[in-house]
Image (cartoon, rainbow, N blue to C red):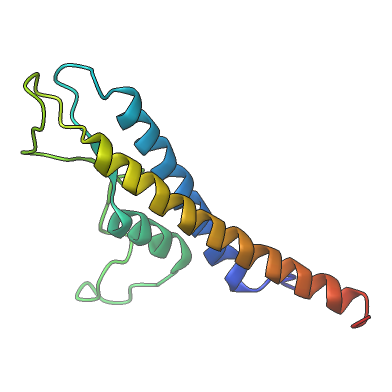
Amino acid sequence: MKLFSSTIDTIENGLNYSSLKQKVISQNIANESTPGYKAKDVSFKDTLQTAVNQSLGANRTDDRHFDFKGTSPTASGIINRKNVSYNHNGNSVDIDNEMTDLASNQIYYNALIERMNGKFSSLQNVIRGGK
């Protein structure tokens, strides 16, 4: 018997993505003045693909069928921003862009936490018999 719905798993995956993005943004901000440092980003597409690959189980009965596990995205989904240079020392960190991403990620994280709290509140209400 599955106690929690798939919504909890989806929210958990979103929180993992948000946590990874927070870590990457923090690294970019910390290396703002490091010469030659290339800013990194988290690819939502790769993160989503990894989550989908983990959740889908498919059996191939013919070689012409698509292999769901065949694609191998990067494990973390972290990519380097290429061909971008903002500073004279080769550093590609744009602090204004990083701060915008940080605020956006914080809003996303708070929304997920609020949704998770709502799910647990509903579960608690059911356990108490609606009282």
